[in-house]
Image 1 (cartoon, helix red, strand yellow):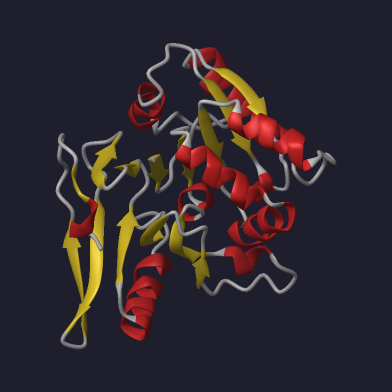
Image 2 (tube, one colour):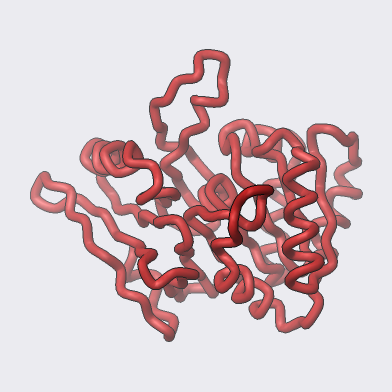
Length: 247
């Protein structure tokens, strides 16, 4: 499996600067191809076409990829058509937004099972925010704020469980993430990886490393010890390390 989960950052929305270029270049490098096929899945953003326009301009025009989008809410694809789109890509890039609704849609349509096939084919799985959480066992998610009540409470959300990790995106950009993640660890135990914007965890089979597109960007491991939640910075490393160190 090849996976790059990004904690946050801009890729060129109008009025913003591109913030994750080094990470995105690593995603492309993992394919071993000069002009890989990128399939953008914008389910979390309600199949936003303007979001895809940004991806097309960035991954397509700037980074030299061939781009396509999989609209699961607006289009009525057959399961075979969805499978063909996913399995004929080199990179799956999942955008940010409502993780909970996205995962419900995927499970309803059987997309979760197709993505498992993609992982086994070594298609590079990637994404930002919701697109980082989805691959993991759990995520620290703000999906409730998208509902009618606009509830700002962060929830522990069950992901696809391709990796036995809990991940928290936007750790430095949204201060509520820090306190809520500590509460989750204190209540449920286990450990979690917190990713700041411009930071990603790259996972190749049973090994990992932290990569960033800014010298200031960081990642942390949180875990419970003697009733207290411990926060440790994960050092950057050019070499892959055993994933079990995080588990």
